[in-house]
Image (tube, rainbow, N blue to C red; front, side):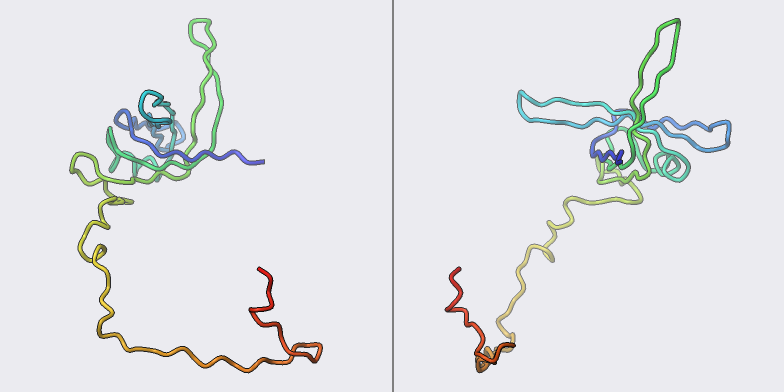
Length: 159
């Protein structure tokens, strides 16, 4: 069985960092993803929980509005408050990566610059004016196939 979630979205709030009783660092993220476009655009909010190294990464490099990639598993839970039972759905993240910049600030490690291909080095086509010319090799003589006859040529293939 598979329980896997992959999300790409923007943080709706600053990461919430806490230390668990076990000594692990725990980070909660509010992630917004969009579906549709125009008048049909809808924003879904996801609760993401990450631990240890991923939580440290979030504390040091992620901020409200950061574009991030999250990979993990879906976890369902519930809790009771004032006699009312609330159900929760969390994404327990094994991977959290920054995908870009926000308002000109570097997103830090794992940074992906979507404009990196707008540089002249990537946009200019290579020049082949001084490239050596090559001629195609002469066609080989038909070889005998395993049954003693000549092989099938491309002209004999019906498709």
